[in-house]
Length: 128
Image 1 (cartoon, rainbow, N blue to C red):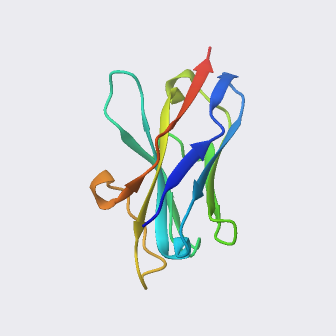
Image 2 (image 1 turned 45 degrees about the vertical axis):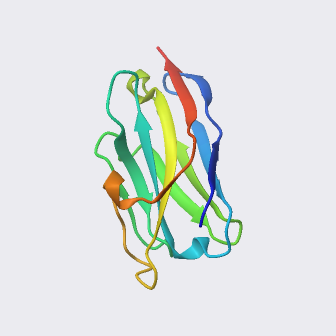
């Protein structure tokens, strides 16, 4: 089992940057595909980005492509989301999620239902 905790959220002006981090407990985090999702007030939770267990593959929502970068350090059991050129519409609670892909270390999942473990979330507010 894996426990996830997000950090790094906060208040930033439009055009600014934030770096979110997801810290995972558990010895086998290196076999988990990890994703970031977000939920804005009054909206459904949506996919932001994901990275394969081995870090070789990543995928982004069109709304963040070119602005956000997902990365992972399996030695430290962390997955980060670097967010640049932030916009007010990026305001949301950001969640880290993980799913064990076993030997399929290059697999990526984008659907929320594919993920088994979730963190409590971290708030990001982008002011205009």
